[in-house]
Image 1 (cartoon, rainbow, N blue to C red):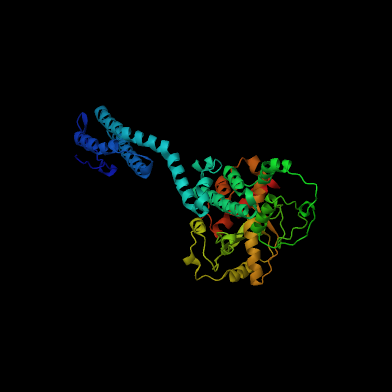
Image 2 (spheres, rainbow, N blue to C red):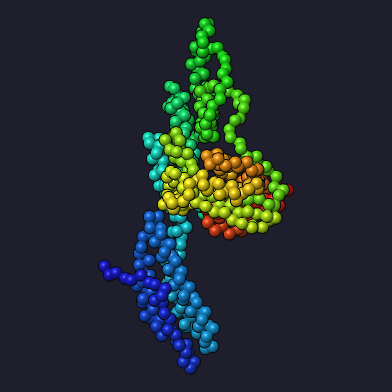
Length: 449
């Protein structure tokens, strides 16, 4: 079978000239033959989801060819005063030849873009869910696993990857909880979880499942299990460990009352944005695969900050830190900070001292710092023997207050930066996030004060 060279825009050369009384398209026949032969490759190529990238490449090339011919048509109309109807018709014929494969490929891309993205998402999910072992397929096969918003063009790859990573981490914690407290109801609890991808309401589910057995079992002798008492304990652990423990208590049908919250609160939170001088900061950290899986706690790898005085940025701070542990691969993908980049940087304790010097007694502002950045900063400061007890304000909490009235889909920093048209030079790098967040603070101040 004869093989034809794919047509290229750079090879489309229209040779036209004007003689008295006439404008001629001198190489029309040769160009038409070249295009017929070249376009036949596009017309006979079978495009599928698997070669969608090739389809996108070919569509771009065909658009370039069409544009080159259309531009030449306009050029001739402007350059020549003589009638050029014949030349125009010849150029339009060539343009129509390009439109056939162009429209076909364009339609295929639109029809299959979501299908291709769904395939990419599920491949990522299957790969990362492998840590769940025998339960992986049931988790990603749950009716509650796939979120249709992942298919939206506005929903970035890093966002749906983060959603999937969270589902997998939460699932791992749930299965560990079930193993600890499930007793002879482990299979039922796992089935409950696969259906909902949550253990919320699992205690009621177990009560209903066992109600028939309890109704048919009676005793007239009071045993020690029927005697209710209580003990007051102080249990020490991280926020995540505490959340998991309370889930386990609930599933064990143990009634408990929170009498005192002794979790670390070294810094005072404020919620009124009535100031214009502060330090806006952000951290990047290693992440952790889970302390319960034997991984170390997450550690700081970068601190970035800007000093604001009366609404203007007057100074900047940016330091990488050696965390003394490996960076979780997902974090490296988000931040582009690698183990090699931080290997020769100062340790976290040294960086936190420099950060304290920069901050002084200023109010600290940041996005989602209450649950992430502040615990990291406090823990690092304690190890370094540095006292950081500054007041702080979390702009994510402010944004949550006005989310509904503003019609926002999300309140992430990249989303809000895009909403307000801020230049976000490098998303998920502390120095860039801090600078953008300082500008976001003043926008939120306008609608909340």
